Image 1: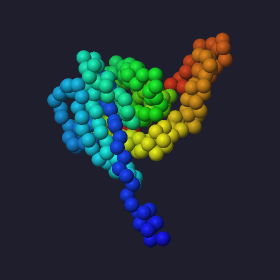
Image 2: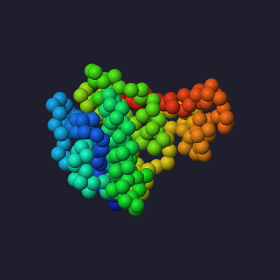
Image 3: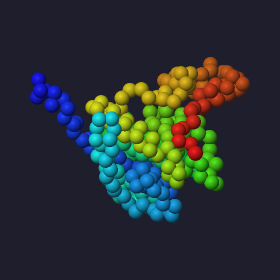
Image 4: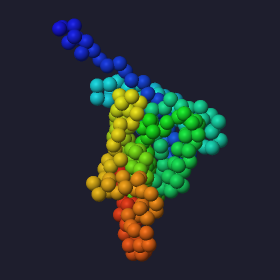
Length: 250
């Protein structure tokens, strides 16, 4: 009896995970990681050359997590360097600059690059993605409406967080949720647990997202019947594109 009790109290084995950062140059990937790991912000821009690597330990619930972070350079010049680091990844930090719609539009290209490098046997469905809308509240960067990025992430089952590496807003909370989701992934046999599509959405919005995912054509996506007038179609479109504001806004 005592032996069994002692065994139950033994600490669980530390979990080792691999995390990579993705996103265009100058969106703040390295600054986000430095803010979290070193609690500081470097205002001078220093381009990442190839790959930066670091290790950190965190405690998530009752598990110690040893996180291997590979901060990948965003410049196209370093493609031949970073293409070797996509495999065996449990988590991806996908970053864009809220003041640059181009950096948000590029997220699809980054996902396509990762999918290509993983090859036909790679499965991106078994990776936790968190999208960081970075530089929130920065002077001179008014950003663009946050509703669409939030919905974009929800369609893909990605976490979405608004962050500021400069002020630290949203950084700690984002990483805690990110690592917690990775622990859930590992404890679920390496598969993302079902659900999460409606996180932060009202029931009406979550139902709309599920319907859009299952839609058969453009009319079905808008929630109107074929041949509907512009007045009938536009309100439907507006309903679907609304989403929640991300967390961590300055």
